[in-house]
Length: 280
Image (cartoon, rainbow, N blue to C red; front, side):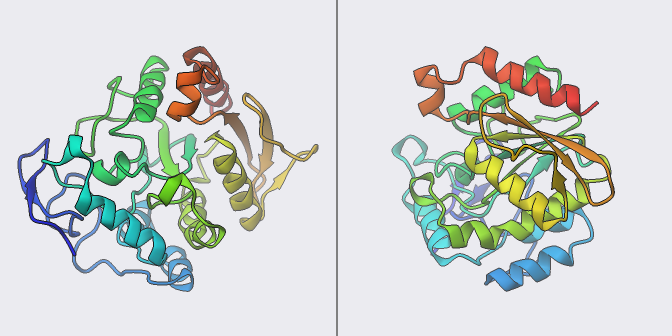
């Protein structure tokens, strides 16, 4: 059940946690009439019937197909972390966002329990996002060097960001069935972007494999040898229409990687530059 209402940190408007669709949360793509998927088959049907990215965003943002993920994301939203006890949590699936005519798609794993699950936007509200948006800003792809929440004025140019799994999973580990149930949203998103898409930057091995699986489902092929994940590695994909899309790998911007030095700013900038160069 939703918790009592608390003021949104950007607007001051009160919201329950989780946020109800159509009640004014910044950037909420859904409303009370948006159809809700409650099974993997319903996800597939609603995604396939979505004519625009706006429809994919709206429908995925109210998805309830995976009971374990629904229970987890909503429990986190009600209990909240002490540091955010005075603000509401989005507590729903996050959507892709950014430039609807993007040449570059960035794919992550899933929203963080107290990051995107709190703010309503992937890669915001935690240090992983701080790294990613700083890199995008350095590359001239983001208006602001940081992004704290949906509605904060951030704008991306030529880039869209999404996730393979759209609900925050316990321990950042979605189960295979949850990954597969969510795949239709990614498939439709990529299909709608495909006419202008030139490159994909996969943040982490999970996103790399999810992107390759998406490509196979869409009838794309990959140049040999078999693509394997390694930071800075690439795979050349060919769409069903014969267009080429370069898949670039980067270690994920998780704190585990950035704190230990496994991923440095220079390494992230280089992977992003490689993806940007392929998208032009």
